[in-house]
Length: 486
Ligand code: NAD
Image (cartoon, rainbow, N blue to C red; front, side, top):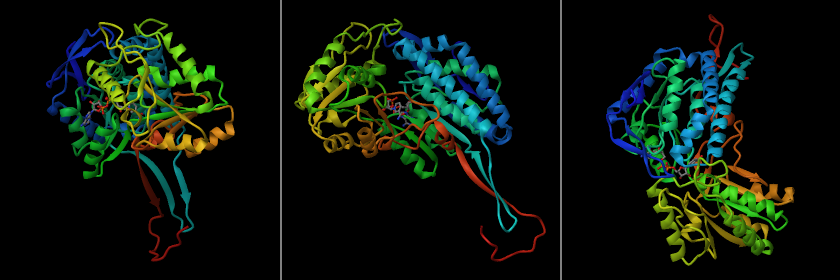
C-alpha cells in the first residue's frame, strides 16, 4: 500500500510506469520514490471515468456532489497543517505561503458547493405554448493537468468546478510535485465517491499526459502549464474538437507612476515579483517605473532586497525558499547569462547562496531593451527587469509588447488614471495598488498567448459544462409549419 500511488476506479495500485525520485528542493534529498502510471494504467483510469460518467448517478445528483465537496473541504480543513507541510516539503515554498494555498483551496471547494446549490435552470414560456429550458450539463470525462508551482491550489481550482458540474475526472499532477494530491486522494477515498468519479495518475508528459490529451474518451482537457506545452495540447484537441481550457505563461508588467507612495510600492513590487520565488505565472517580472522616481525606486528596492529573508522554507519568517529543481535553477541561471550577453546590467543577485538546495538570490536587471529575450520570454524565477517611461502611452506600449497577456499591476494615487490605463492593458487580471490576490468568485486567466478560457468564478464552472436547450410542447398539438418564434 505504501508504494501504491495510482488511484483507479476507487482502488490504489502500484504504478507500472517509470520510477521517479521526488526531491526536497531545500536540501536535494529524496523524499520518496514513486512508481508512476503506465500508459495502460492511464487508459484504465480514463475507462473507469467513462464508466462512472455513463452508469452512476454522479452527473445527475447535484445534492450528492454538494455534500462531497463540503466534506472534502471539512477534511482538508481538519488536516490543513499536514497539507501545508507536505506542500512546503515538496515545492520549497515558505510555509506561510503553503498555508494560504490550503485555505484558498478549502474556500474554493466551498464556493463551488454553494454555486451548484444556488444554481437555477433558465426557463422560458413561449407564445406557441412551448417551454424552453436551458440546462448546463457536465461534459463527461475531464483530464486535469497541473504544474508544480501551486500543486494543491491549482489542482483544486480545476477539481472543484469539474466535480461540482458532475463530470468525472482523471487528474495528473506534475511529476515533480505529486505529494499533496496523493494525500488529497486519500481524503477523497475516505469519503467514498462512486468508483471511477475521481482517478489519480502520476507521471510526466510522456506517456501519461499525452495519453490523456489524445485519448478519444477524454472530452475535456483543463491544462495549466507552459505556453509551449499548451500550444501542443491545443493542436491535439483541434483534431477531435475536444473541449480545452489553457492557463499558460506570462511576462507581467508592473507600472509604477511618479505619484505612487514609493515605500509601500517597493514592498508590493518585491511581493509581486518574488512571491513563491518568482515561480508564479502572474509574477511581475517587468517593472516599469516613471522616470522622475526611477533612481529613488532603485535605491529603495536594493536596500530592501538586501534584507530579504531567503532560506529554510519551514522557518516562519522566511520570505523566499529554493527553486523547484536543479534543472529549473540551471534554466533560470542560463537566462541570467543571456541577459548579460544581451548587454543588460545585472544590478544585483542571481547567486547561489547554499551548497545544498536550489537557492538563488533575486536578480535585478537594468539597462534593458524591449527586444531582449529577458524582457520578452518567461523565465519563471526570481529575475526582474527594470525599465523607465515618461508618459502614459509609453508605459502602455511597453506593457503590452510581449506575446503574453496574463496579468498586470498599476501603482498610482490617481485611481482615475489607473483605471483608464487598466482599460488599455491586454491582460486577464489587473491589480491597481495591490498584487497577486485571486478571488475565488472572480475569473482568472490570460489573453493572447497566456491562455484560452478562465478559471474560478461562474466562468470557471461554465468551462466544465455543455449547454443543452430542451423545448417541451404539449403532446397531440397539430403541426404548425411556421410557428411564432418568440
Ligand atoms: P509544463 O508545461 O512543463 O507542465 C505542466 C504540466 O503538463 C505537468 O503536469 C506536465 O507533466 C504536463 N505535461 C508536460 N508535457 C505534456 C504533454 N505533452 N501532454 C500533456 N501533459 C504534459 O509546465 P511547468 O514547468 O510544470 O509549469 C510552469 C508553467 O506553468 C509556466 O509557464 C507558468 O507560467 C505556467 N502556469 C500558468 C498558470 C496560470 O494560471 N496561467 C499558473 C501556474 C503556472
